[in-house]
Length: 294
Ligand code: OGA
Ligand code: MN
Image 1 (tube, rainbow, N blue to C red):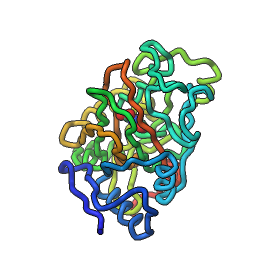
Image 2: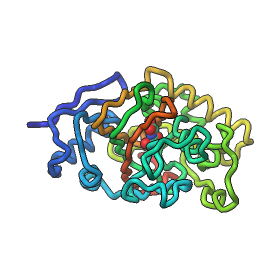
Image 3: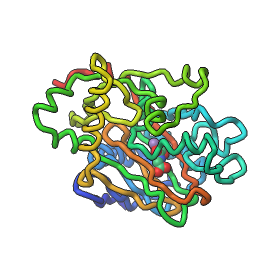
């Protein structure tokens, strides 16, 4: 059966039917998924009760895995093969972290709009998040389309931001919510990297605003002015018309393109378990090396 894509909103997201993610993916199917990612930026697959291995196998067909170490999780916290990002609120014994736990407070930085691993010199391409346990309420993940947001900017703003370069670090995103107790070693690991503010999606030529809560400076700009421009752009880009809010069901797998979206988690009761597991596909080059679009 061929795959069917049903658009979820005007600008972003589609539900996919007619595919069983347990089955090996053909190269024709993989190409169909890449084309759908270019077009919809977020794909939702329901009723896919995968094992971690099956989740990894599906991911690997679409591109090389990115290793996503969380600097605060230690070996005792590992519930998953190390290549997974454990996006749950659970410790190594499957218990929710306490409300004041530093690991929980660091992790809820994911509730700020961001693009995965924009704090790495070569940031992520796709993320694939699978729901194993979900809370009784809340905990949606929201996605905003940065290509549609770019197109809605006025020409003056497009010209202003065209060649700007930002610095991204998890220090900036965490400091913006008052999480500042990093050790000198952690700070060393979190050194900022440079990213273009306007990206071009290679296969389509579509431009997008590369925003993320990790962005904290603009090269050559005074800091308060840089922060305010980033804040204004984020406010613009996350208006409801550009957003899809995903209400999770168990066994959903949601896949998004970090090059043309931002996402954020929404709050849920801290005492309840929310077990979501992510694989990530790496990008191919630093954004600052992006070829100037013809
Ligand atoms: C992620 C992420 C948000 C959420 O998996 O990268 O930011 O809702 N998740 O868990
Ligand atoms: Mn994320």
